[in-house]
Length: 79
Image (cartoon, rainbow, N blue to C red; front, side, top):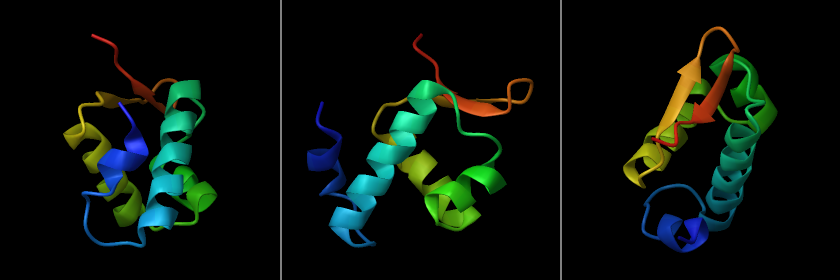
């Protein structure tokens, strides 16, 4: 499904900025190149709490986002 159309329903931050940030986050998660939350939030130019909200919203949209401590990256579990 189209992430941008779905994000339109999420309230809060500027829609365009948030849609682009969520797409970028999803891309990094797909590549499994996120690093720990602190590093990822700096790369995304958002706070750790905002990053956690983005991750929660992706989960609410049906993405199974998990974190691997060994690889130190977020990834999509494709159960």
